[in-house]
Amino acid sequence: MNLKVRKKASFTHYLHNHKNGVSQFFKKDAVGYVKEVLNCKYPEESITDLVAEEALQYLLFDFKNTVLFPAPKKQTFKFIDLFAGIGGFRLAFQNIGGKCVFTSEWDKYSKMTYQANFGEVPFGDITKPETKSYIPDNFDVLCAGFPCQSFSIAGKRGGFEDTRGTLFFDVAEIIKKKQPKAFFLENVKGLRNHDKGKTLKTILNTLRNDLGYYVPEPQIINAKEYGVPQNRERIFIVGFRKDLGISEFEYPKGTNKNVSLNDILEKEEVLVKYYLGVTQKGRAFRTHSFFEEKSKKGVQTNASIPNAA
Picture 1 (cartoon, rainbow, N blue to C red):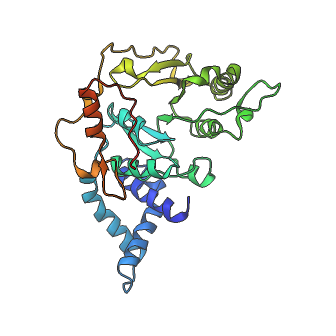
Picture 2 (tube, rainbow, N blue to C red; picture 1 turned 45 degrees about the horizontal axis):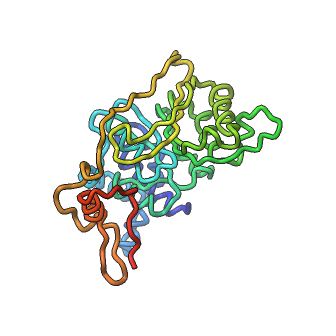
Picture 3 (spheres, rainbow, N blue to C red; picture 1 turned 90 degrees about the vertical axis):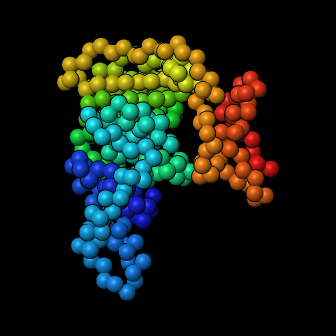
């Protein structure tokens, strides 16, 4: 992640956090980003840091009205969003009063979608020290949907150091350094049996014994049992800092409500900006129309869109 992109990420993170004390982690690069933009737009003017900072404050007035999924007005806790994708964790946590104070995602197109959804550019590769340096202190919950990777634990007990070189190591390292009150981790269903169960055993040993968190047994949850029209099984791992005195946790029960894809589709024509894409021949495939026609005909879809020819 180059300096220019980091500055843009800092700029959007600053706009989101200027009232909650977290903005100090992003202000320097945010001012630098605004200064670069102003220098490009007004090359004959002398743009000082003071001018750039005044412009940054001015931008705050218009910012909130342009965010598709804004932060809740009443915020009860802070969280960070690692391996953020397009913002599934963020949307859910915002809906219960959470304020996101840091985001990381490396995929180019996921970052574009995330920015469109939340008005924020995620920082990049979380394995890089420069990316970790932007993570603020005193957030409450760490969220991460990290990939499933094997550990080299040949004959070892399987702890923190044995995870080095994997993306889970970076998650564990951040938890160790920042000591959030809780974490909420997601992985594919196959993690339970991955490498004959050794991978999950190492993860739990690290979280429970090396990092000192209360971690109940992970649970596999299927999204279709919670009002989502998708057969999506994922394993969830939650943990709580032991000084909080939490010794019991119960995963939420399913809603037992069957929801079809047609139930959640927009009833009105969607705006052009939400088209999936346009081919070189000018043909557009829209997710809305495609799925709506399939649903009307009783055809079950797995969220796959035909490639444009």
